[in-house]
Length: 202
Image 1 (cartoon, rainbow, N blue to C red):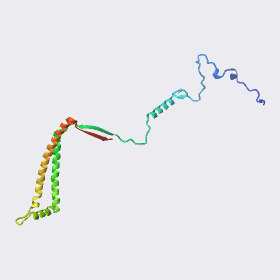
Image 2: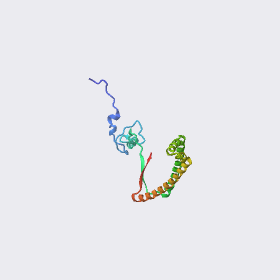
Image 3: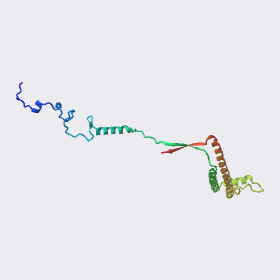
Image 4: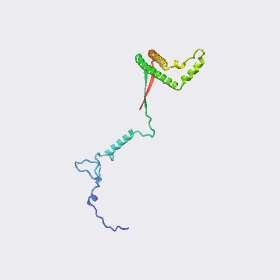
């Protein structure tokens, strides 16, 4: 096979001179590796190892944020409950006496009111009349009538009797509560008192 293109023209610069990478540097110019011309300008952060520095810093920032994040789990975390363990070291007798006095008065008033309501309900149902007639027939004789239950268990007598019991209850409850506070203070000095655990829901 023969070449029919004929003689090819020779370029003077490449035929006689060295290649661009083999050229000697000009006087006053530092020698270094050959860098071909770039079509696009380099990024503002410069390059390092063939990669832009800005991209590498951004990748490190993203990697650090992903490493700092904790993976989410599907299970819901239960709310924690704070607890405090306290101890009742001393009870003030004066405050115990005041509180017990007021509570006993309220209890006495409730007792009197409950007695009056109960008597009215039983009288409306005819309990006293029925029971009183039976007792009168059982205890009666030819000389006189028997025991009259209705007159003995009248409403004024019931209220007076209940009020006396309420007053006694007020005095006894106040005295016993105050004495109990003194006894508790003495026992707390030896064993440390009653321990309580208080919890707070979040």
